[in-house]
Amino acid sequence: MKILFYGTRDYDRESFEKVMDDYPDVEVEFTKTNLTWRTAILANGYDAVCAFVNANVNAMALDILAGNGVKLILMRCAGFDAVNIAYAKSLGMTVTNVPAYSPEAIAEHAMALGLAANRRVVKGYNRVRENNFDLNNLVGITLHGKTAGIVGTGRIGAALCRICKGFGMKVIGADLFPNQALVDEGVVDEYVKVKDGKVDYNSLYAQADFISLHAFLNEESRHMINDKAIGKMKDGVIFVNTGRGGLVDTEALIRGIVSGKIGAAGIDVYEEENENVYKNRSGEVYETVTARLTSFPNVVVTSHQAFFTEEALGEIARVTLENATAYANGTDFVARSVVTAPEK
Image (cartoon, rainbow, N blue to C red; front, side, top):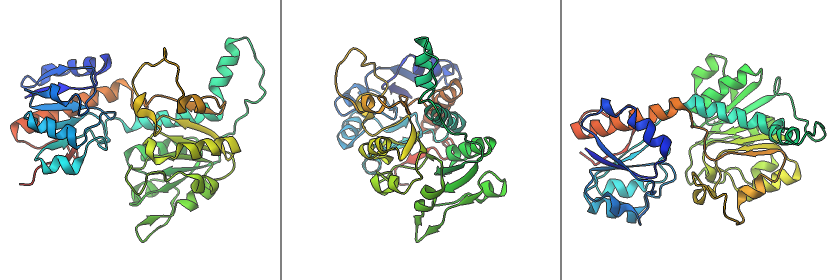
């Protein structure tokens, strides 16, 4: 099994090289070039490619990959919306992901963003660096006794529910498929209603002082956070997104911040990030949405790094190479990691 790893950085190479001895039948090559239709030709002579969340594996890229004999696409991330799944399946290609490399890491980062934005940590830190110890405009709110609204209670959302409960918060969950076990454990105090296949987010918006997104991105959930949704939230709500940028209408988010409806925002993903994510553009001068967001003292923005821990990188490497080996040997893939495979 010969694999070309696209869009790799030093930390990717290091994490995979640490475990390569455990997979002697897998040969890998690394390139910093990202996977798009323009770069798919580089996979000529490889059995598989491996890409990350910022790739663009559209139909044209898939045609080129398939034409060069690639049968397996290994996404070293949980999300697979970068791949045209239906078209990959029609070409007889197998696509795998890493469904849960570190839910706790992402949940911890979500809470860190919420806390930093709420307590104006960045602004306070910058003041102290300049020997300014004034506290004006740094006031936040105490989370203890407040209500957290967690949108999506899969592994990541469930981990954040536990963190919020540890802070002494009431936890409301919103999920098309409520997890009764979380209620039984006392982790989630209640779920909002689901009727006719629709989640009643309005109930969550009306009650939550802290809202964090962990929902899947699809056509139905795209821009679920818009002017209308924000208008239904409590005044001064703390808003966090470590899920997918497309869940939020960024212009509406900015209007909510300006109006004061959103009292603090922690953003790790945003819809306009693809041109920037994992790139150093510090020497360039251009208008970006990040410049607008970071101009607010109550907003903290990070660069799609919620997953970024040593443990997560290790799990990504292990599961990705396990899936490659399973494909080569015709054995079972790592649990729930197969997104699509040819019909048998």
